[in-house]
Length: 553
Ligand code: PMP
Image (cartoon, rainbow, N blue to C red; front, side, top):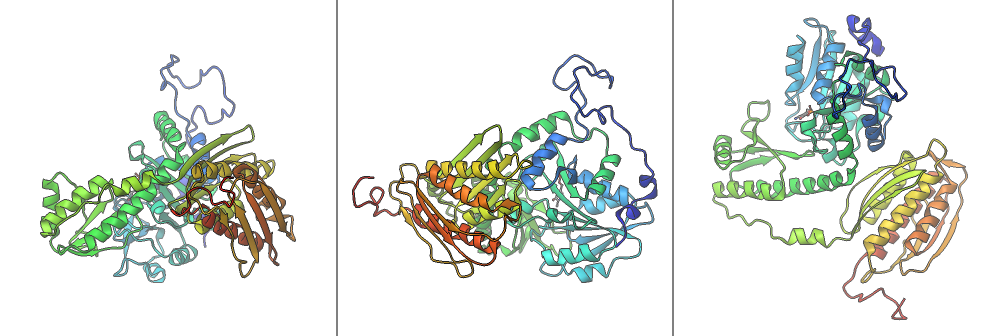
């Protein structure tokens, strides 16, 4: 594998980048007489932050990565163009791209006079990395992979992608514009070890900011530095930076939208698959479906005549007669289905209002807790599982908190920004407090719940967790670890986490575990804890109040 700098075009390597007026100004000044701006304030009279530090810091927290690994562009389209400009010699270099895929990889290559080599994905749109790499030439400098792929919608095999990264002698761009809809982990955490990897993400899709034009490239800091030196100095306006920052302060609204979009995708897939005018609905891990029709032209025209626009992808390889349909709101989806069912001569029964009422009745809580040491946000849904979104800055702790969501089958999102540079104490404790308060709020009067939870010992770790949500407070902990640290968390903080949780939820919590491996022991505890919670929070119509022989608690 070549060194990254050896892959960079010589003129870029030698470039003295334009230095903006504010590059070196790390401290906030009072008077700005350096950039020939109009001094009369109107909100936009100053140049924007050239390297968008504040926005990057927020994104770094949300994505569990370092801000030095983030480049922000005017859409990810800017990052795609920059990759060509930095790594490819016009009229000399080539790029390898998958096909069918997002059109900008080849348009940007044409603009930069870079020859394109296309690897046709397999029949089912899967990736055979070895076969793809066999097409690379001596002059092939970059490789573009899109996963989930546009327009096919499928997530490509991580193993195959990693094989390509490890075996391609150039830059590998993995475009993850749709990764949030895939319930799969991003490759972005690999950039520290895989120096030739550039992961693209964007605020245009799930994050609902297509109008702001903010794309994200995640890569080794040496690549980010070069991208920064080649981009236009002020490539993202201050209004766009501010608006993105303020929209990112509501990460949970987006997570809820994500699970609604995924549910709608599945609903659409089911409803479309049975239609006689549909030949095939391809499996999607994105927010759209590629649908092969018997006669796509009639479908396209009928939809357009009724004011609905979808994307005709039939000219792309492997996409004959196929339209790409973006998942809309439930009303929009039903309106489209109604038209397609009409065209098929099949009766369409739109969903009832039940689904809305069901959502309204779910036991949910969103809670924030701000102290001088931490800022914690927790969103909890006791009645609907969704892929957990957890970011506390402590990777091992995140992994444990995810267990609660998976094993209690609840929706759980946590974003915590704490003083972890000092130690993990405040973050772990305050997450426990806020999480317990969220449970308390979501459980409401606790009427109708099963109250007790227990779990059987788990094979490897022998963890047992008993819980009583009746309102009495007691905490017992019989767990011993061999090491002071487990991952990046102090082992003794787990006792403190559960104790704070029990006190704040007002519950009895007895935890016992033993084993040989600390990671297994604590993972067993979190899983057993989640299972116990799952039993205890369950509602049963036979329970008039909180079950108690006293009749009153
Ligand atoms: N990558 C893929 C796979 C896309 O489908 C799109 C837009 N349709 C983009 C990137 C562009 O995203 P942005 O709006 O950030 O330029």
